Amino acid sequence: MVYESPLMLRAAWKSQAAEQWKSILQFYSERNGSDTYSIKLDKNIHRVVTLLCSQPKMGQRTTRKGIRRFVVGNYALF
Image 1 (spheres, rainbow, N blue to C red):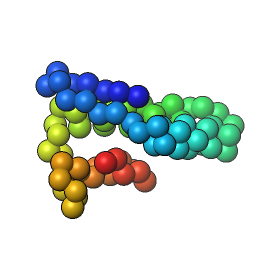
Image 2: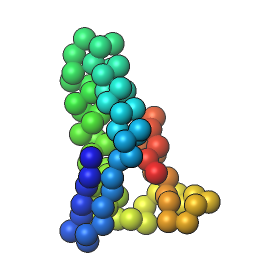
Image 3: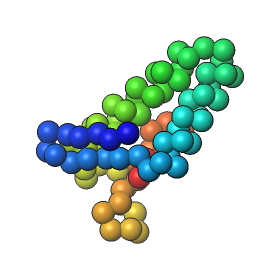
Image 4: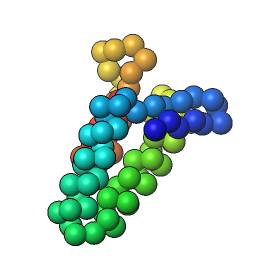
């Protein structure tokens, strides 16, 4: 998954992160017997990632140069 902003910044999911995210969404769908929560959670994460592309200084600085941490509910985006 790749996101772009009008500022031409991009965010891309590493393949391992994308697989883990799909597993998380599938877990909630199976546990709840419905895709409603998974869809809502996925849309929220996508909204935040798009926002981060347009506001790259949001989130906490990390010890790694150019990497920031942003918490969304129970999940952290780097």
